Length: 252
Image (cartoon, rainbow, N blue to C red; front, side, top):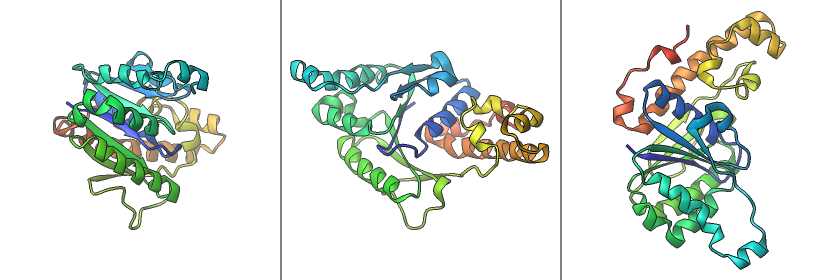
C-alpha cells in the first residue's frame, strides 16, 4: 500500500479530476483511505465529505514568517505524520503547492518521508506547453528529493493528444478527454459514480439540451468513467488493478 501524491504547480490540468477518479476506484473496492486536500478552496471535501482532510492553503504574512520562520514548514510536518500511519492517503495538491512542498522536503521532508519509499507521485499534465513544461520541472526536482518514490505521468488529453511530449523517463498513463455536450455540467455537479445514474431527462433540463443529446452524453460519460477508472487503477497497486470493478461504476 502506497500513498499517492497528485501534483503539478500549473493549475487547471486535472489534478482534482485524477484524485476524484482514484477515490472512486478505492470506494468501489471497499479499500480504506483518506483524501488530503491541499487547496485554497475545498472541492473534494464537498464531494466526499468526511473522507477528506481539508488543509487550506493560506498565504502567510511576512511579519508572521519573520517572527516564526518555521511556520512555512509546520503545514507539511502535520501532513507527513498522516502519511506515516497505516491508512492510505491520496494527496491532492492545488496550483502552486508543489514548490513549497519541495522547499519543505529540502529542509526536512526527505527524512520524514524516508526518501519517498512509500510514495507514488503522479505528475498530471495536459498537452498545453506551459503545463507539461511545469510538470517536467516539478518531476525533475521531486525525483532528486525522493529517489525511493515511484513516479508516473498522467497525460490528460483535454487539450489534445501528446506528440513527442514527455514528463520524464517513467511510465505514463493516458487520461482520455470527455467530448460531450453535458460535460460542463457533469464535471462540477457531484460525484461521478452518482451522476452516471442520473436520468437523461433531468440532464436535458439542467443543461438545456435536447433529450437525445443528453442521452448520448450520459452514455458516453458512462463509457469514459469506466475507461478512466480502468486506466488509473494500476496506479494504486497490483492488488487493486487485479480486482474486477463492481457494478457501481457500470452503466445501468
